[in-house]
Image 1 (cartoon, rainbow, N blue to C red):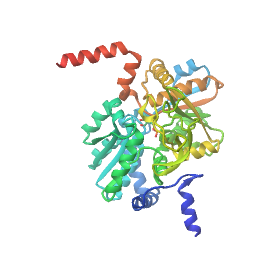
Image 2: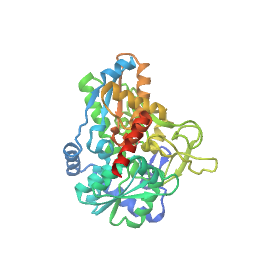
Image 3: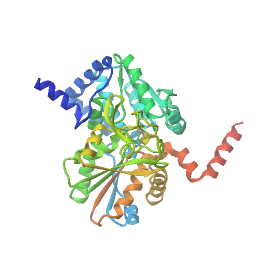
Image 4: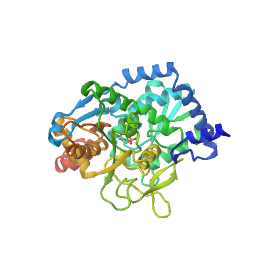
Length: 413
Ligand SMILES: Cc1ncc(COP(=O)(O)O)c(C=O)c1O
């Protein structure tokens, strides 16, 4: 009885999390849970993963003192954690390599994944090519259109990109499609979920594989400044890059952790992805309990963000709990702020962030300006902006970009 109670408690983060799935998925989740708890402390597994992270993903990623940005903000010292320099251009590869090793050890021959911005799909496609596994990536049609560069690259690596035409044709719909596919194929296929959410054990697995970010930041700042950071800032889609940065510091109340949600185009329903805004409430969706954007009847609301990776109605159950406990603060940056953050980082430091990360940059600059000169802030640059060329160019240089596109089409004819 006690063992059973402990088991149950372990699958929740406070009152969030759990595994609310159809009966037929329970064996697949139990197989994954068993493999993860057995291998996470296994020294051979850990050594194999560490070697992959070093030699394939390019870790540790740099922690860069952003001198110009610090001067512009006129407050605390700003360090940028450059996950943008990891292989495939974002933090997603950390979790992908961990889960691919798990899949291999479980004897799976293929992986299925969902993707929004395409960064998780890209990392999965890359890893699957390296490991010789079949790879299917579900992606909403809206996201396929806005993240074409990643779609092209995924296909080059041998992945099948499956368009999802349900709902708003974004990340939520891609997760549904991937879960549905997994129910029918879990004997051969591992579902390689891309953020710290979904039914247990996924939120724990993804957070554990992403925590390498925060552990490195702790070591790198100690080396540079002789102490730990004061403020951490990260954008929050599902929550994996934020938890990856925050988690190693959560026990230290002296470190402020700030998650930046997407304020989108405004406060109306369907115009943003503010799970902790007025329309976000606890609920159970896609196999887990957390905060979701919902209408009065509990139906999941559509979302909007300029960045596909933040355009999602749910959030990590562990972050929901940390927020309720007051341990992680949540703020927002809207589409326009994100474009400002993007442009500022380009101009000040010569670094092109992903539009997701640009939300963290925009808020980070504002927050740094109210800190004293000795305060240390670390902003997670979760990915690089190559994938967003089409969106940023249209927003920031509309006439020039459209003329270029037209000339390309004319030239082709
Ligand atoms: C570069 C980048 N940052 C952030 C995110 C948001 O995901 P998460 O909140 O899980 O880090 C994504 C998702 O695709 C992404 O591609």
